[in-house]
Image: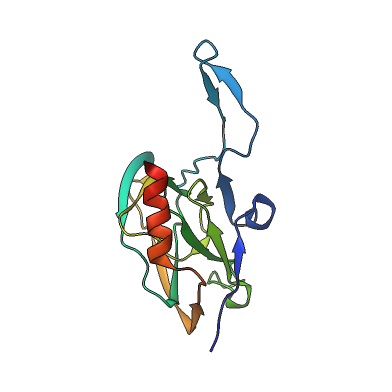
Length: 180
């Protein structure tokens, strides 16, 4: 069986693919000192003519286990950020591009994003669609809308598996208790 090891999401390791969005950053006070602003945690890339930045919400189903990675996608005309609302940890699977413009499957990587971390994929970065670890996970999406094809999908040559050592029922219960 072909598998991908799961790594913790860290800025240094994720840097070739995009930005980590979390509160582990510098901040400054705004609103007469009542608010901490963690400024410019990610940049919005808008390429091509007529594109504009949009903000959307998504509600995800929990990823079925074991998680099969059979395809990747990319957005060549803009970056795409996924930021959890509430307690929604997720898995991020990425790969560098090769000289032909397809994913370099030998460079596949998988990251565990805590519920307090988001990601911003750079324009053109190959990644798997959202793999949420809880049912009904809510996410804020910041990306490009406009003319032009902005989602390329490709199948992988072989299926890779992410076998997570997580008890989803226990995880969901802990997260629900944490919301109280």
